[in-house]
Length: 241
Image 1 (tube, rainbow, N blue to C red):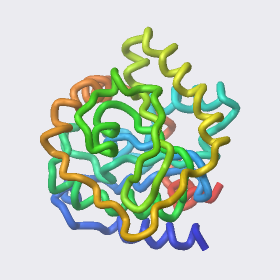
Image 2 (image 1 turned 30 degrees about the horizontal axis):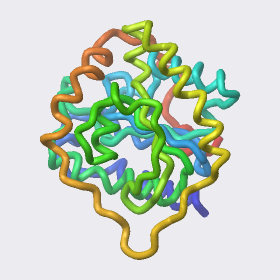
Image 3 (image 1 turned 60 degrees about the vertical axis):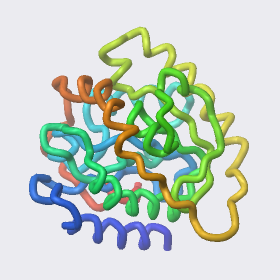
Image 4 (image 1 turned 180 degrees about the horizontal axis):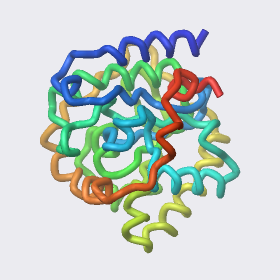
């Protein structure tokens, strides 16, 4: 049932024309992983490779994400990976306020259906966005907390973006240390869910604009991607591994 409901959200997103990003996208990058995942990763927005293949984190940053998961005895098939925006902003420009407001409903519905215990924000932008707070990733990384994101309370763990470790190797050990907390957080189980109406995400635009530079400079570097023959399938997009 959960997979069927996710399929319905995917079909809606796949044909979405609610903001101007649909005019320049190649395809929607809905997300990829397991529909029953206890662990979700949230990035900023698709890059050029993701836009072409329809899958999140398919380049070098994605390969590092896979490796870090392996080091805690997990793999991509056990988790769900999404971005705040489902369409690539042209030239990797900053997401605009109306794009965030228009697209966040898809993320909230994914959270509501998948019901993850732990949500890891990847990088400054996603961290500031989902926390609704201007505190930067350099101060927050590796500090778990319980947060309500859209309809659901989760254990939120801010992490450096994997791209930051690719281009600043000293960040790799920091990422490893922070990833090492994930199994313990999962073991705590989901936090109590508040009764009543879901929390509405705060207005964010001014908080996050300056936070994009770290991730953007990394994502603009050339990435090694999977073969073009690895075409996007509904199974890859919807976690039906």
